[in-house]
Image (cartoon, rainbow, N blue to C red; front, side, top):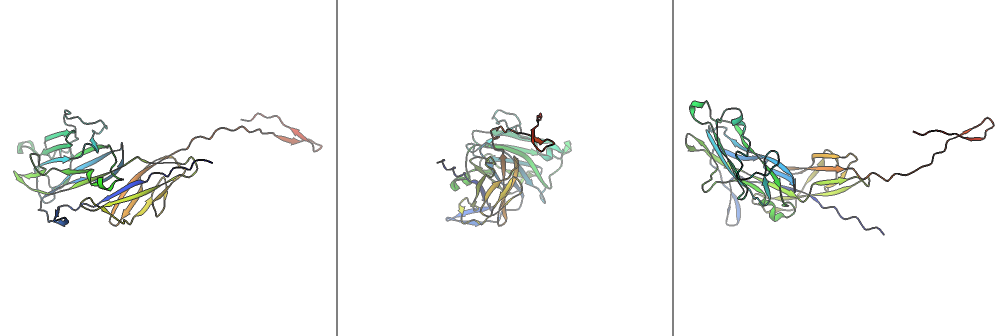
Length: 312
């Protein structure tokens, strides 16, 4: 009797809803009103990937309504979960000079000076700062939402399937000590809200095979509220745009076309949504079989005649 097929491991989604400016007081969450200023954020602020996956995160500053002439961002991450890499996917060393790409204001000449560009992979600290520089060099103030720089990471270990660890895979802006994230105008601190990003790492990519005509695997969703605790139950609407189909319970069935389908599966819960990529790999080529083909015709008397032919 053949051994039963093992149950496929679930592919995971995590929804993290962050409340900017939130405080924890006496064991419960409260929302504080942040001071007005230029906000720092990550885009996207929620990423789903698998071990070994690479992804970009933009560091953004919103100077709308607040002229700023300098912005400095100090980003904290857990180096046991994430590895900082360059745009060629090579690990960044502490000795690397200017490992981060310049943001759009430096690229378009609005700002002239890069003031800091460094990564400390041991501590999990990234520092990037830029500004318009001297009035004599033609730089001008920032007045809109812009990308200060772009970060790139490699996912090292699982966070998604243990809800206690979901809040650990985060990117945050340092706001204390010697390295403070801030926006500046004419020497004055005009910093607003400092956002954060959540990184969810699954055990392996969601890959399916149609070797047996149909292959399927379940997707599951995890929810956390603003302070990292799990939310249950979670009502999720599933959809698949390519690579196969998915039912209302999150069971994905691979299609008959092999390939990689980025962002093919979506999960939506209320106003939150997330995407996962799937890969469909072809099954093994079946073993060849030999068939004997005989061609017959009939003669003028109705008898069968064997015809010799070359089959191409």
